[in-house]
Amino acid sequence: MEELLKVEQLKKHFVTSRGIVQAVSEATFSITAGETLGLVGESGSGKSTVAYMVMGLYQPTDGNIRFKDKNIGKYHQKRPLELKKELQIVFQDPGSSLNPRRSVGKILELPLKIHRIDSQFNLRKRILDLLDMVGLPKEYETKYPSSLGGGEKQMVAIARALSTDPSLIVLDEPTSALDVSIQAKIINTLIRIQKERNLGYLFITHDLSLMRNIAHRVAIMYLGRIVEQALTKDFFETPLHPYTQMLLASIPVVSEEEEKIKPERITSVGEIPSPVNIPPGCVFHPRCPKKMDICSQEEPTMVEYKPGHFVRCYLY
Ligand code: SF4
Image 1 (tube, protein in one colour):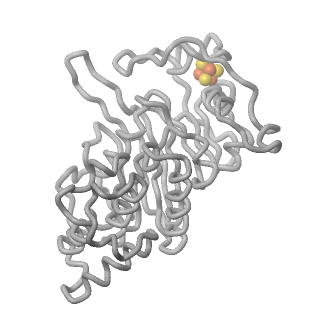
Image 2: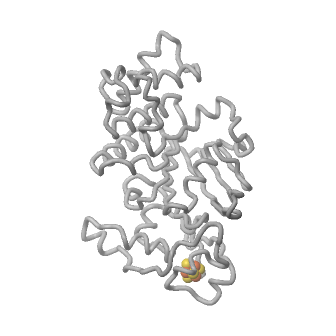
Image 3: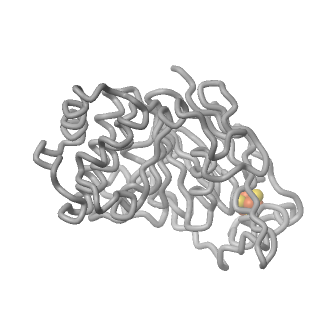
């Protein structure tokens, strides 16, 4: 499988009036063609900051981002057109990411013109193909975003991301503003399109239960660090990090089989610390029910517990 994206030791710190915000302190992962990596974390975990660095919207404080073996972290905002074409993003709120004064056809036409993807003659066919790809009727070409429902707007945003024929799409909480039934439709569409086009997805979400259906691998972020990363099956069957176990124990199960493998409820203590005031040692120790003396003294490193299953915790 072709490796599309490789992110190593990524860091992003912001200087603010309250001090230095350590939004991301360590993120290392890769994505191959046809693969979805779910990057999961609560609000403030740094997952969206990682996505914005991958897209060139934030410049990394340190670390490497390689796309198809080219160092792309260095470009920051002035990325070559060819690279922008290959790496696309779908944002959480389709309402604010679509221009309300343009029809759906015009919204889809713009990237095709910028990237000179098709001749004028073929533009219309291409727009209709994009609508068909996301399951919208061709009549939607003349509609405006204000007349569309939330799910339909997100389908247009996905069609726009697909218009440049990218290799990798960053999906930044693409379903979190939508009803559950519409969420399922969008997830199924994304899975189908991925299979058809061998696309890589970096799927950013706070909703761990979604990952069971769409992700091939899952990485969990807590206070700017990836604390566990594994194949989705291993991740749900043998979650290792106490934080992961806490997240999994809190999601509803839909079958007896899931009930059997669900970890016992772990109750964390305390609040998530501020990223301006990161605790010493393991950043989860103020909330961890399994903490030991060493946990508040030195930060654990990531270890490979078994092939492909990584965890950052002194218990392993
Ligand atoms: Fe808990 Fe210690 Fe593991 Fe951190 S290193 S998760 S505090 S047991």
